[in-house]
Each structure stands twice: as structure tokens, then as C-alpha cells.
Length: 225
View (tube, rainbow, N blue to C red):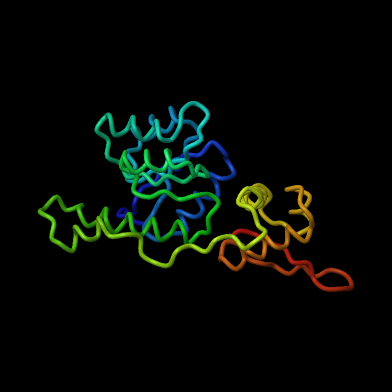
């Protein structure tokens, strides 16, 4: 942790999802989570109190939308960096986020690297203009350049975004799961649970621990990295 870390506020009404996003941010060098908010009103209050440099903002909040929060911030002259992190895919919502100055828009659920490249792009642009002096062309390019890196891989055929999110939520709640335990927690077959878990192993979000017991093959147990 460094005094030069970008400070981040997480805004999501699902505690488990907020926990996952917090772990993702704190896993990324140069970033530090300073608070978590579960409603639009508390998000606005925490932004005023903590003055974070970046807000990871969900669209679906219990008292107002994330777009309303963003509009309130901009209407009050607050230009804090905002990354929309949400399952909302409606074109009107995406356009409103862009029109009100969101730096990026990331659809849940996503792999760690999907968020990391956007965090690093934000940090590059944020630092480029932090001196208060006249910006050079390289600094300006850092602000307006697109996100670097390859396009995030989509879920494999046959896997749904909603179930993938439920699997991550179960893992955040329970800490470690076997395919059988995941099947029971999410309400899907054991074979399907294993497919989701193995997908997240390949994306780097989960790691596998082998539990040795009696006769037969060891049990594969999955936990967040």
C-alpha cells in the first residue's frame, strides 16, 4: 500500500458482490479501497466524506439508480472518476453513463483481468493530468486512448451470466466449495457447477486445492485467489 494509491469506493447493494469487487481492486497494484456503500444516498455521502478518486458504481441500487448518482455528482460539479460495474445492458443506460462522464462500463459478471485493464487505464489517465501543469500530447493521449489489452473472453457456450454471478456469490459467502457444494448452494447440477468453477480457474479468479481423504481420487475444492 502506498500514499500514491488510487483510492476507490465500491457501490453495490449485494454485500457478497461488493466483497468480490473489493478483493479484485485490492489485488491490483496501485489501488486501495477506502469504503463500501450499498445505496445511492450512502454513496453520495461517502463520496463527500472520503473524496475517493474512483467509484465502482452499480446501476441497480435500492433507492436510486447508479445513473442518478452519476448525474447528481456531475450536477454538483464533482468530477470523481466513475466505472459503472453492473449487469444492466440497456442501450439507454449505457448512453446515459457515457453522456455523464463514466470512464468505463463493465458488465457483470466479469473476470479479474477485465476489471484490471480498466483500472490501469483509469490510473494512467488520472496520473497524466495530476500535475496541474499544461498537458503534453502524450498525457492527452493517455486520457483519450482506448482500454489496452485484448477483448475479455465471453463465457463458454452453455454458461449463463446470471448463474456465473451466483457461483461467484456463493464462493464469496462460503470461501471454498467443491462442485457438489456449489451445486447445492446455487441449485444447478454437479456437472454444471464444475463447468462454472473450472471456467473461473482458467480465467484466474479461482484456484484449486486437492483434498485427500479415503479411497478414490482427491476432491477438488475451489476458492478465490
